[in-house]
Length: 547
Image (cartoon, rainbow, N blue to C red; front, side, top):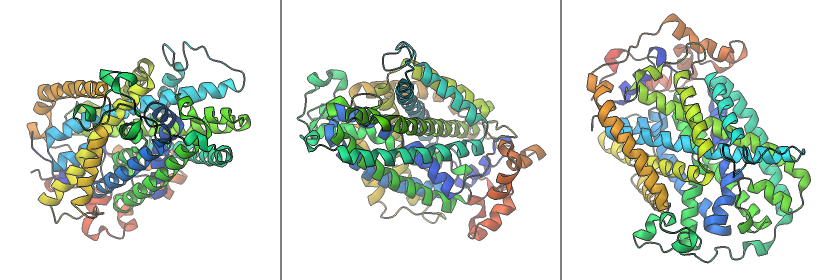
C-alpha cells in the first residue's frame, strides 16, 4: 500500500502504446484553458449563493482568503506539473511521493470533486440559459428547468453535448474553449463597468452580518466541523461565516488543479505549466474579488440566493438592456467550466486505468482523435445523472471538500519529495519550503473543517466506497501487484495519430509542431539534460525502473 512509482516509470508509461496523449497546447492555450475553467461558477453562480447563505458582503474576504490559499497551493502544483508532466494531477503526484494507497484515495476523491463540480456548474448554466430564453419570451416549464425542476433537462443536455466535444479530441476542445473564454471575459468586463455605476454603500452595511447559530441556519447537519471542535460558534455569517463562505467558493479557484491534469498535453511543459498556472491564478483572483464587491454593492446580499445572481443584480438596477449580453457571456463562461472539468476528470480516470487501479480497458486512447472515449462517455453520463438528481448547493459542497483534500495531499507531497529526492531535476521549485506547503496545508485544513457536517458525512461515505473497491480489486490488480509493465511499442497508427489528431491536419499540425519527438527536442532549449521529462519522446523499458 506504500509502494511508490518512480518519476521515470510514470513518464515512460504515459508515452506507451495506445494510451498516449498528444502534446498540442502552448502557454496561451493552457492559460485560456485555466481561465476558462476557473472563471465561471465562482462569478456567475456561487457568489450569490455564498453571500446570501454564509458571509454577506464579507464574501469579498472569503475570496481574498481563497486567493491566498490558492496561491500557496498553486506553487506546489507548479513544481509537480513541471517535474511530472503527465495526466492525473494530484493522483499522479501522490503516487510518486506518498504511495499507492494515498494515490488511490486522492484519485477517487478527484473523481468526486470534478463530477460534482461539473454538475454544480451545469445547474447554474441551466438557470442562466432559462433566463436568457425568458428575455425573448420563451419560458420553459418549471418541471424541467430551474431550481424546482424534477429533472433539470437543459443541464443534462449541455453535459451530453460537451461529452461529445471532448470525445472529438483536445484540439477541438481547445478551440471552443478559447472562443468562449474570450466572450466570457468581455461579459465580465461589461458587468463591472455597468455595476460600478449602480453601487449603493448601504448594501455593504453590515459588511459582515451578525452571526447566526447552527439551529437558526439549518441545525445539526449544517453546523461546521470547526464548531464541533470548539473553534467556531456559528454556521453562517460572522467570522465563521466568512470561513464557511471561503470553503464554499474555494472551488472557484480549482482551475489550476484541472490544468495540472492536462500537463501531458502541453508542449514544453517545464516552461508552459509554470507560466500558465501563475497567470491563471493572478487573473482569476482579481476578477473574483472585483465581481464580489460590485454585485454585493448593487443588490442586498439577501436577494442574491439564486443560480443567476449577476443577471439578477442587473435586473434589480434596471439595466435590462445588458441582461442578454451578460447572460450570453455567462452561458459561454459556464459552458467552458463544465467542459474543462469533465476533461480533467477523464484524465485522472485515464491515469488510474493505466496503473490498473481501475480496469485497464478504459485506458485505450482513440488512434485518430487521441481522446480516451471509453472514459469520456461513461463519465459524461454519470455527471448528467448526478446533475439531474442533486441540488446545486449539495453538488458544490461535495466538489469543494474533494478539491481541498487533494490540495492538502499535493502540499504534503512536495515536502515528502524534497526530503526523499532533493537532487531531482525540477522545471520549477516551490520557494520557501517548508513554509509555503505547510501554510497551504493549514489554510486548506481550516477551510475543509468549515464545511457543514452533512458534506463531511457524504464525503466519508464516498471514500468508504472507494476504499472497498481498492482493497477488493485495485490492490490486487495494479501494475505493482502484478509486476507488469505496459507495452511501449507504438504502432504506425499510434505514431501518426498525433499528426492527425482531431482530423485537423492542415494548419494546426504545422502550427503546433508537436507531432514528433524530435520536433519537441528542437523546440525546447533545455532538453539536453532532461528531454525525457518534457517531450513526447518515449522512454525504453529499461529506463522505467520501479522502486
